[in-house]
Image (tube, rainbow, N blue to C red; front, side, top):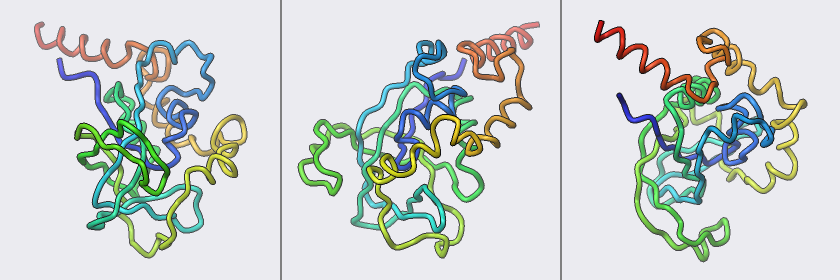
Length: 199
């Protein structure tokens, strides 16, 4: 069976646990029992030679490769292939998923990089802007500003429209009675496929 755990580097709205869990688990409520069955671990990390931009007319950012620039974000482990599939839908056609190497921060300093202490380098999936660069502003996207001014439109009832495409995709592929979000949905599918191979 394939490795069930995958990792990713997030640098925008998905740094907010409410947004990440809403995409992956269908709920941003930490009291939902599904949270206990998913073992997502989050650590601060930094991606070198990339730059984060605001996306024009949007609440979220994008990154592009730029020598000498760095992007601070979160490194998340414990993601399943189904989680990555939902994240692909959430990110949409303006982004492509790539593998990058990020450095775990053993001490996270200020957002501008002062005081950061870098540790191990690890591989992770991330989403790189693939649409026209004209869709990006030159200005840096600010996570603290997003949390303060926009998060309420992404978490809870006010933000439900943000997840319509993900929910539709999950519903279309539902096979385990939980819209594909069951704790054992991916594992069960893999086991059934293996059993069919063996006859």
